[in-house]
Length: 202
Image (cartoon, rainbow, N blue to C red; front, side, top):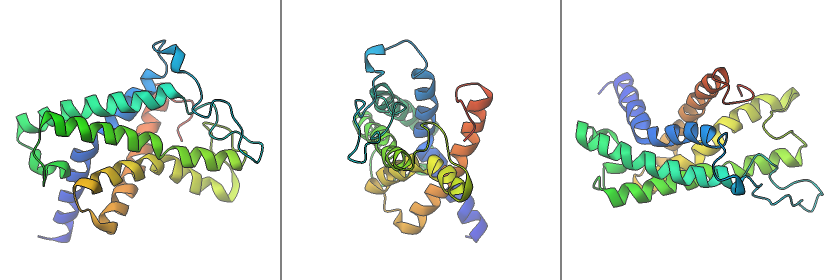
């Protein structure tokens, strides 16, 4: 197999595997703008400050968003698992290389994807609060490129790690997952910005 064909096959498998996470990320954007579950529109840090006197995560990380990732990550994975089985593309999904495509398995992996997506966004928010970067914004100057990348890649670190739990990606493929995921996230954010589901494209 040529290097280009191997790379193309790998990219296809990456997208097939993490499509539910991509869909969940979009649905959570919509979910957080609805009037549903208003009681959960509370910051995960409960408005508390860290020992430096600054907020832990900020107002943008809410329990509603966290719950949304769990719900939509799970639902999207279950539905996508049925689509993969029905269309015969199970072999293109890393989750099904060593595990059978079943409802219960998809329920578990979907929940973990949502959890990984939500949890791995928190360290980024924590770091930005320490640097006094406004929630939902990036910074300027020398740190700008770093935080633009981190904003897109944080959740991918978590989702790719979940994949690694069920298929031995290795560090090289894991890092490629993060790079491809970050690039995809940038494209999706630009589209969401155009659709007015995001306040800024990055």
